[in-house]
Image (cartoon, rainbow, N blue to C red; front, side, top):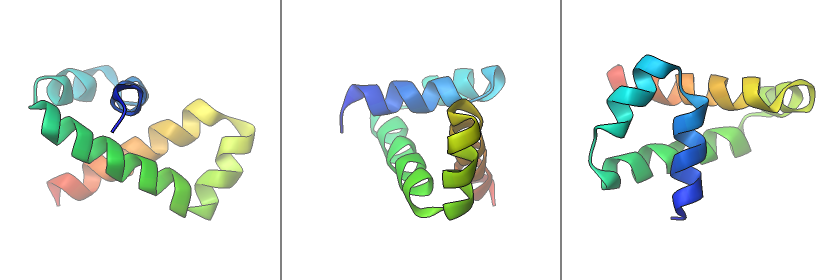
Length: 71
């Protein structure tokens, strides 16, 4: 996975989560970033939001990925 996916995922997180995820092993960061990419690609609702505000769509996808991680 390209480092830019991880960087984009980290940038989409709120500051507290960004710090926590940045402290995790690189492999874990890449797994979460891949889940985030899949979330962005798969959800039609995010497609609509992405047209209005790409950063908001990326932040929402990141929130969903982290929410699933803690369930």
